[in-house]
Image (cartoon, rainbow over all chains, first blue to last red; front, side):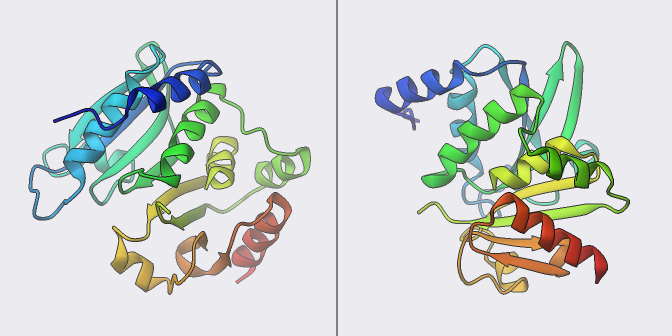
Length: 149
Length: 67
C-alpha cells in the first residue's frame, strides 16, 4: 500500500514530535476479518507511519479475538481501537487513553497532540481540576464522539 | 477529546475513549449523538454537547456522579 501520510504532513508531524518527552507505546487492536472491520488495515498502517516519525514511539499490533486477554486487560471491546500507553523500558503504563476508529482528518491532529500529552506524563490541567480528580471516589468514564471533519 | 485524555492521565479512576461517530454509528445512536463533539459521561449518566472548557466538564462530571 502507498504511504498514507505525504511528505508535507510527515514534516509537520516530525516538528510537533520534537516536543515528545518520554516513550509512548501505541497498542493497536484490529481484526483480520475485513467484513467486520472496514478500516482496520488502514488504521494499522496509519499508526505504523505515525509511530515511525519518532524513535520514542512504538507500536504493538494485536488481534481483537486472538489476543482477547490483552484486549480485555486494556478494556478494548471493538476494532479498530488503539491505546496510548506510557512505556518505560519493559514496563507499560495504561492511562486508559483510547481511540475507537480511524484517526483521519481532524482526529489525526488529535492523535498527534495526544501522543505528545502522554509522552509528558503530565495532564497539564489546572490545580483546581487536579484537586477535584485527586478526590474522586468513583470511576469516571468519558466517551467523546467526534468526526473526521 | 484532548481534555478527556488529560483527565485520564491525571487520575487512575478516569477512563477516556475517543470514538469516531461515523464508524461506530450504533454506539452513537445509543447515546443520541447528533452533533460533535459529544461527551457521554459514565455510560450516559450525563452528556456534554459541544466543546466543553475544563471547568464545565468538571461540573458535568460532578452532576453525573450525583445521579
